[in-house]
Amino acid sequence: MRCLAPSSIAFTLALVTCASSFVMEARAAPAVDNEGVLSMDDYLLALERIAPAARAGAEAYRDAYRRQCRHTLAVRELRRLVADGSGDPVLMAMMSAAHRRDQSELMRLSASIPCQQTD
Image (cartoon, rainbow, N blue to C red; front, side):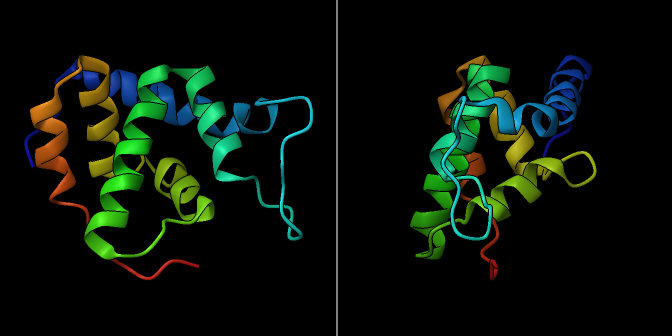
């Protein structure tokens, strides 16, 4: 994977920092399941409020994961991918590519998503 430019790294770090603080503010009454887990739609809405490219990149990652792994990415796993450390490098690069509207980069990154067991 190629290195991100400093401006892309700053965008990614700002996104990761803000994501966890805004997630529960997506709506006045976000939809949660029986275990108190935010719905995927509400989490994506929260990402969109932070930056539309964050949502676009997360949706591209989710869709590519479903195509490649033949499994639905759980919201809990997506939240972990955004929040752990500096964020998952592929997901952060996809958000950056979405910000630049670089469809060829999004497609290239989609092929590099690892399939793994989720919660």
